[in-house]
Image 1 (tube, rainbow, N blue to C red):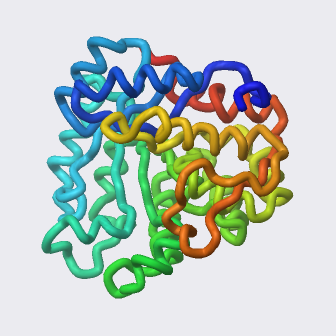
Image 2 (image 1 turned 180 degrees about the vertical axis):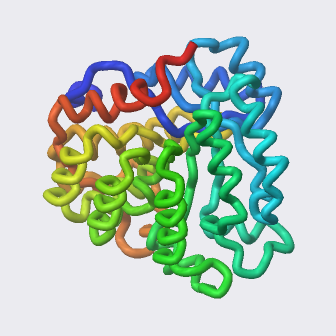
Length: 313
């Protein structure tokens, strides 16, 4: 299938995860075969971070996880201190995760916790003061809210999750927000709201992780999806959400190939090359290619990420 790829240049994967040192080599070897030459690495292990710095000094842009437990309990000072140290420690951006199921992992969350609470303003101010982008995950697929988040008293609705993020962006217009998973809004009916975000907030970018979510939703109306990708071509980064500690060549390959089919080809009803748990009982997921122009693909795969994060050094 590689002969059909329209884009032949290097690829910057703007959303990956790295763990322990012994998982790095396999990840790099597989990625190299698929054209990945640079990537954001969200760090889950100090040893893995140090090993990646030492062994692959020109490969990674590192993202540091901010303490979810501290943020969830409005413990601002340790998070601000962490942000101040971030660049000196070798990281280029910060990461925080507020997919709704975070409440399954953190105990004694204050009633009515919101990420747009003014109590958290010092954290966003510290990000601005230290010129530190934030990769911030909010909300999840519509299918998750249908299948897993039915307890809205705990998880909120998807609309409530998105409104909180929107309020944060309104108050902190100087912070670069990297919002993964197409801003949690690749569903066709949500693209107008995502477009309004991109129009109103020039400081935000989105990425294309994860492959099954993008393929499932954007394939549902290729005309609207293609129009969106072309209009906002300067604001979208290629990303996969792949992890160094998970999977093999087939696992990686399925995710990379799914996105390349989606972005680069005009294929119709192409089966997703791996199982989509959200649709396995309702017929599966099929990809309809968007056949994006080469100028858009160059921005998606490489130019946009380099503009924000630079070339790894």
